[in-house]
Image (cartoon, rainbow, N blue to C red; front, side):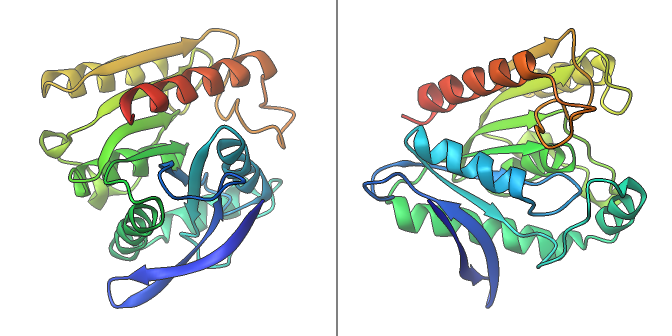
Length: 230
């Protein structure tokens, strides 16, 4: 269903995985899907495929430019994540937004991200408020000191997913984020998943995956995008 593509990115080119519905991308809703710290791994590609099956056009930009980290090497993943150049990532993200607008013919785009991708989803919302109108951070982290978003620039509804048993993005941090975003007038919805821990949506990590919570996250996200971007 999906394929690797290149797209213009501020005078250079970006790369990513795109999945489209069977009848094509035109007039569909575009969704940016942002990776965890492992890179553009198969699980993220399958998530794009799943969005396409639901009628969306989904593009996951490859922020590591071909590098992926085995799921058994979290220390290495952390190093690669912290080495990510935010200027380069911002260019790739913005180029991906423009590519979805071009392919779908629709000016509004949604974004979902997981872990570090959840943090970057919020960053992208503040960088491209002209296009990003629905943001879904799933247990999202912003570990880079130079990536603190200016939430006053956000012009999108936000759906926050967080896990009650998460030691990285704690329930307290999730509530604080929702409160901060709401303070700028954004429409914010927060869901806490009581039986889940960090990375509970990643089915390739059986030690973290929580099926029931993952399916509920998916259903809520699809409904949110359909409501906010139609």
